[in-house]
Structures are given as structure tokens and as C-alpha cells.
Length: 265
Image 1 (cartoon, rainbow, N blue to C red):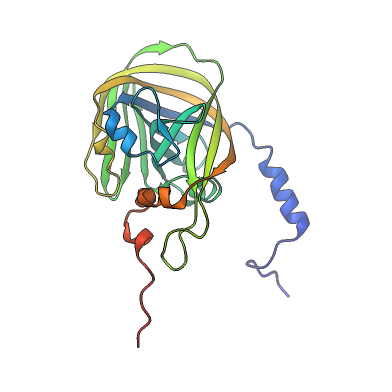
Image 2 (cartoon, one colour):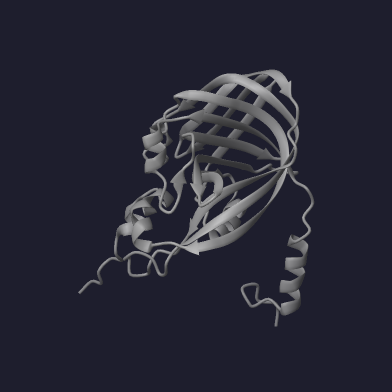
């Protein structure tokens, strides 16, 4: 019988796949990162417990083009500064990805809020433009010009917080208590330049980051980096406490809160 492609893989095939994924080569990306101060009460309002606001009400938008042959994928995120216990990090609210393959790992494994979208990173001489878009709306756009080179920082670690959960099959809450995940990124930057420019937030009912108003630009940079990441489930969290924030994950809140349709008579 010819191989059935939906059929089970052998133990040897599974082991070989794991071995290949454990020794991936460095993959570099070119990206724009914009950081700004917003309103403290707004930043605090988007953080599900047990996350707490960081010392400063910072928002971070990142837009990257991954340097792979063929059709380079794009990856982006909008996150707010947060703290969990003694760990400072970032809580992503939305993470647009241009390829389905980029969604699965972060969304299913780490619980990240990844969604298909458009990520643009363009440079013409010193002029830089980068944006995140979904449903035809560029809800974040960064425009500016490179004004100076910056010394590449030492390799650093960044922590992102996410909640891994499954909505209940009967439409009432979760199947089990959600898990808070720390995703640690080990980043190496080989080039870095400072950009003077603007951060534009556009209204979108699907990605309402315009609520995180730009009160003061902290920094805009463009650079080349590579990173690896590791996830760790650190604790179970209250399903009741997380439920009011469930809509952050979906374009249509009814996907999260509605029960299944009633059976016809």
C-alpha cells in the first residue's frame, strides 16, 4: 500500500525531526523596533493577572523581515512592558505573521497571540518605513530616516509573557486552568542604527493598539539580529481572572464567549 500521508509517523521519523529542529542554523532578520511611553492606566488595563505593570508604561512595536531565501517571511508584534514576580518583560497583544508556518509554533506551543497579517520593512537609502497591517488597515506605521550608527549591544535576553489555554468545547470558559508561559529570547545584534521619525497608530476594531497612545517616543532603531528562544510554563492561573481578557486573542469576541449553536428540532 502506498504511504498514507495523514497516517502515523514512526518513532524513528519523530526522533529524526526532533534532532533536526534542535540544531537550526542562525537565521538573521532585518527589523525596526519602536518604543514609546503611553498612559500608565491604559497599559495597566490590558494586563491580565498575575501580570503587573512595569516601572514605566512602555509599548514596543517590532517589525522584521526574516532573511530566508525565496519569499522572506515577515514577523511583528505590539507588546507592553510588564512584570511577573521578579521578572521584567513584555506582554504581546498582537503578533502578525505573514506565513501560516510562523503561527503554529508560537501560538500552539507558547500561547502567543499570533495572527496572519502583513509586515512591511522597507529602506531606501536613509529613509525607513515599517508597518503592521491586518484586514487592510496598517494599524502601526513607523516612518523616519537613519541619522547615526549605534554600537551593537552585547548579546541579551528578553522575556515575553503569554497565556496558553483552550476555550471549552461547550463555549463556557476554558477546558482547564490556563498556563502562564515565560518565553525567553536570546538575541544577538550585529548592526544597529538610530532612526528619527514618527510612530503612527491607526484605528482598527480588530487590533485596537490606537488606545496605547504615543505620549513620548523613547527610541526607534533598525538593525540585524538573530535569536533563539525557549519557553517555560511557570504557573497555572485563575481561569476566572483571565476570562475577561479572552477577547484579546480573537478578532470576533463571539468566537470566545458564544456557546455552540443549538441543535435544530
